[in-house]
Length: 493
Image 1 (cartoon, rainbow, N blue to C red):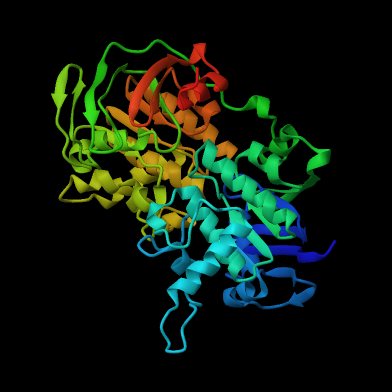
Image 2 (cartoon, rainbow, N blue to C red):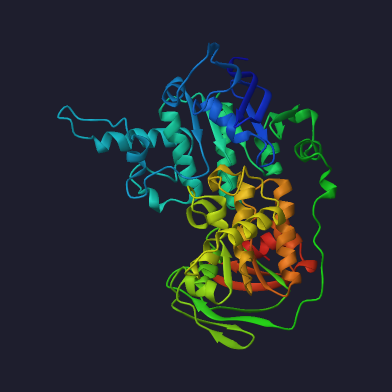
């Protein structure tokens, strides 16, 4: 089988710290190599080396049978290697066709863009992949997240990509959207495209993968063929322990205080939602993508405008007009979009952790601030080069822990976690679960949104089921399983 890409003994260091050492990778035509490892294992560095964004300190890069000492990103793209990240890189307000041909537009003899020809060719590309539900004339903002991911892949294939690197492509998707994307991955591999696939979802990896390259702390711990291994072995290679030793939450009696939501709704996505939770309880919100879960909690947090509804804490009406008011009243939200909404990317770890705490003060005591940040870094086990390091230099799990550290720095009453472990490795998930349970033990109100049903079932005391903007049921987690939950999500009895 034709070799498309090969790395031999690749290593990379930053400031004297080795983040990759002795990694080998071979990708053949039509093969799906799954790159597996905890956050901070070196996956992102390896992708950057392949894509030409950074150069290795040592090792050999072989593209399509030819050795290259130096490459730059444009050169790698022109060779036929495309990297598609989980953050959508499309322009919402122009058409699918215009996005696909952006930078290489088809023009008439008069020099104008030939929109009709671009649409026709875009539709041909979409039809080849049986993506007939997406048309070149559609605006990108009309598409679901999964459809946008598909358009990014089509754009890469239009540029004659022979290798696709897919970095957490389903991290923001629900079950049905994930199924759509995985089917597309299978079609592409069957058509001879070589794929490097990165995901923290083990079931997903075993559905599409042929080979597993497993990294831990920058080292290659194993290279396994799917037919010769199982999820337990892969997880053990990733984290150095059995899956059976994963975090199992502690259950305890909920408190007597109450939080009540009455008749919350907006114009289009949430309709007359009411429920009551107790302090010390972890209340889950489940449902398919588009069910209204995030829209509901964003209204509670004051990030979105509500049409109607009342919030009561301990029987007292709480009025919230914006997130600043929410924070002042002890309501914190950890958004699913940590990069877009949760963090100031080019600012330091220290500034991000102290952000809401310092906003309330006219003067900042620098020595006390450093002491608080150091304690937070130690308490939340945030792996960083130092408090002054840029927060986006941290792995995804450590970025998430920095956001949680910020919220806990000024102790609140209500904590809303929206997909708190999205794009986070198994080890970091365990730590985040522990922080959530610890807040519940402190008699706080916890609302947890997750599209991962095992996570929702294992972490929640009760689950509110959202469907098409309505709260259709509230179930006790001890009385349901994944099949029952999915039936509730779909409205199938």
